[in-house]
Length: 137
Image (cartoon, rainbow, N blue to C red; front, top):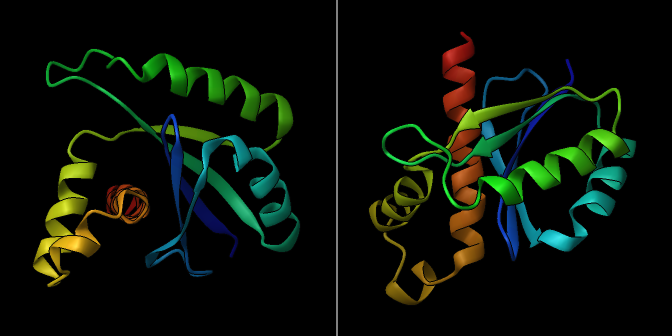
């Protein structure tokens, strides 16, 4: 089976996670500068079979789009132009960054390690993907 890839897109950094080939487990892949995301995905898609990409959709507590929603929408247009046949699905990402930070605390990471924003983004992408997998079942 092909993998599912998730993106936690941000202005500066983007966290990326993928499933295993059986689409059972989500694992953090990396965090990269957002401006390098399209070239990164081109290379990744050339090496790995990916069935679908999911991207976090930022929302306010009341369900309305957050400030960064326009940033995500611009990226989505670029993604769909570049990868015309790759399905892309938006998933509510409320609380994923908070959950990622709490996961870091719960796993015993020291304060200095928890300040690594790239790691937070990668964990947030993993949480997003794991939630998607659970919802899909």
